[in-house]
Amino acid sequence: MQSYQAANDALKDKVILVTGAGDGIGKEAALTYASHGATLILLGKTVSKLTAVYDEIIAAGGKEPAIIPLDLKGATAKHYRDMASTIQAEFGKLDGVLHNAGILGVLSPFEHIDLPTWNDIMQVNVTAAMLISQALIPVLKRSESASIVFTSSGVGRKGRAFWGPYAVSKFATEGLMQIMADEFDNTTVRVNCINPGATRTKMRSRAYPGEDVSLLKTPADLMWLYLYLMSDDSKDVNGQSLDAQIK
Image 1 (tube, rainbow, N blue to C red):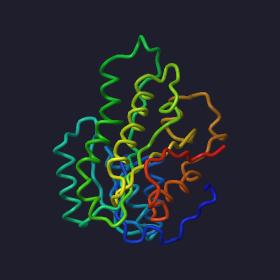
Image 2 (cartoon, rainbow, N blue to C red):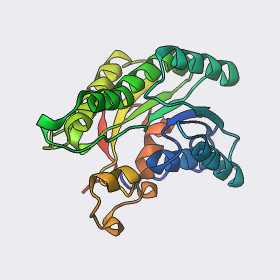
Image 3 (tube, rainbow, N blue to C red):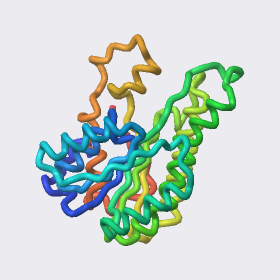
């Protein structure tokens, strides 16, 4: 599957929301989706970063994106319901959601995990993704073929010492995906996970500050899978946790 190549117009007429769209994999996914014909809704907490992505999309000849500045740490269910109402009013439907926003916290021994850090990670990585998905389901159901993609991690499949709340949040993400995929099976909404693997991002550099980044894949190297799961080529794929880097 890693040889998959999307057609240039694979996402033509699709409307796709990307969270964490200002940096790293989220930014690369937004630019890639736009280059394949999609209209992007860019969600993130830093307006200047979202504006920079907006400008890149326009400069490359893409369709004008929408920007939603929102800090998932403090956003409420009402914020997401209001967002869903705005998307439905502006676009009439939603064809895809990439849940890419996430925080790492601090790697530490289990005994040193503090509750505020635990709560922040669960809020951003799990609760926000659940609430966003819940609010957007009615809009996604207006699409003939809608895709929800969650961002997972290798530590969300097999626990690893010192990864504490981040790893637990990714186990929860895998479970959330499986529950939703089973519940929406045989509908027009499919739900899957991507494990990006070791990638040259700011989050990775915080976890492994001494690592030789030249040995890591870039976000662009992973986009084949992000395109596959958002395109209609994957319309029969549901409930899967896929690796962007196949060894």
